Image (cartoon, rainbow, N blue to C red; front, side, top):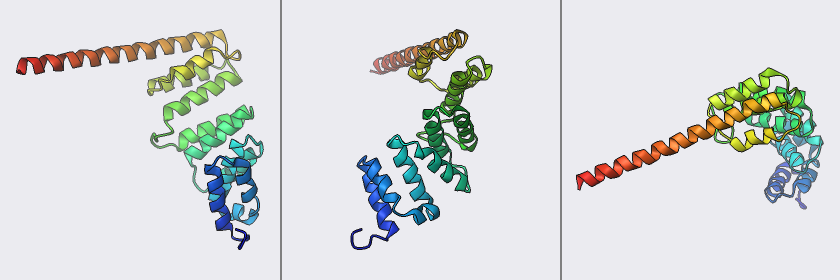
Length: 204
């Protein structure tokens, strides 16, 4: 970079290394040296948005928005990232839009992004923004039907003062249902193991 400071490719590669080393502000500083690359290379713009997010900079909102607006296709993972940044800034209406857009763009569950989790996020945000809105609980119920089973995330809602008691009562029922299903599955597995052991014993 010292020899050819104008080379945006080298700058991007160096920024990647800095990001991997969790030097997010240094990563941002390098990327901002190549504004033309940010306009022409979506990967540079996305890396900048992620670096700003990890550095807790409000500028991440505008950078993500620029990436999303300029993208020809809706990427559910990046829409989800953008939604989380907006929620962190307490821009709930815009965050909700991006969570919903991510859900629409997600054609099938991915390893790190599932429809059930997105539904939970949508429901959670609806409850936080307007606890009396019945759509919030409906979304969370749908998430559980679609195999969302993160009881810790559900229990966190019980400690949120912004959520009404009526909604918390429904959340408790969902937690009880998940725990009961998990217990039943464990007992079924134990019975199956016993049956297998019995068959092996009879075979001997």
